[in-house]
Amino acid sequence: MAQVSVSGTIHLEIAIAFGQGAGTMRTSRSAVKYGLALLRKNKHCIAAIEDWGTARTVFLGQAVKCGQVAAACALLGGVGEIRAADIESALEDKRIRCPVFTGRKK
Image 1 (tube, rainbow, N blue to C red):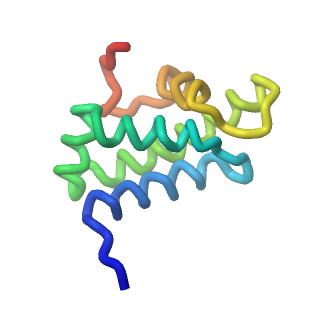
Image 2 (cartoon, rainbow, N blue to C red; image 1 turned 60 degrees about the horizontal axis):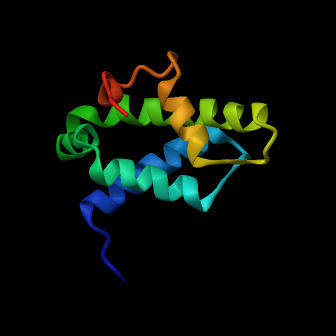
């Protein structure tokens, strides 16, 4: 059986939490790539993953909210799947107060 790295396992946890929020709404491949890029490159995400024991509960809760808001953004945009732009819009939404993205610059 193949081994999965610790960060790979954490990425899966985050994806599952996002999916719980998104419900039955599909997520495009570009949105998945966008989300993974954020997790791998954003210094705040990297710090949260490095201190996963402390950050886990809050981070996963916010991933669920992000999935909910991204799904709503997709619906409002008239599309049947979550796009990268929907995730970006969700992260800018005031209802998602994830400490990881507070003060984030474009």
